Length: 243
Image 1 (tube, rainbow, N blue to C red):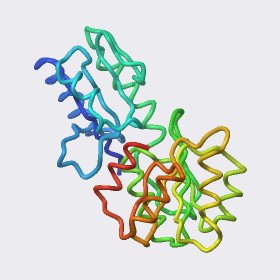
Image 2 (tube, helix red, strand yellow):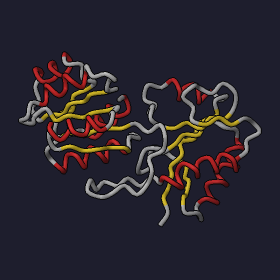
Image 3 (cartoon, rainbow, N blue to C red):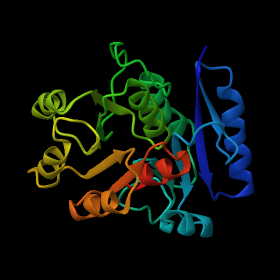
Image 4 (cartoon, rainbow, N blue to C red):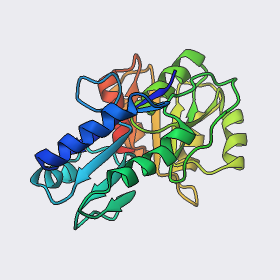
């Protein structure tokens, strides 16, 4: 069974929307199917197609809720610097479809949540690396799933500070999530991560010890956020969009 790629579409003229809907319908017969993303979709969008000359595009690009990990295919004049691909008008829909196929047909959008499985696909360039440090396997899997919904799909795991240190020596991470309830001095690791060179983009801590003191310590340590257990899915998504 093929993968379904949800595309967030912003702007575009009626005739262009009609052409795009035709592209979506035709792709339904292919191994990689493209579908219009709506807020009712089962997952967040995998990619965005934006008419940068439209009024809606200005609002969408300025929104603080825009996932900065989301790849943007922009059409028209005035594309932002973070655009992944830019196409002029008149629109060459075949070129846009080929562009998406190069990304998703090779990589796929299905997220492997089995930490013991070997990766079967290559991670595309520009994807940010995340390390989840938590002694509980169920919590690690849950965080992986929530990270994937926010566009963070390259995720490694560690069940202790010692194991995490080994992984940190092997590669650089843009986001590190640390359970500070562990017994092997997790706060010392947090302090090293915050002051690391090159720096870790975002350090997020999790805890079952819900207290003002814990939140204050996380803030004073320079953490991007603290996530209380049991996790709030909505809060997780908002935080993972910001990291």
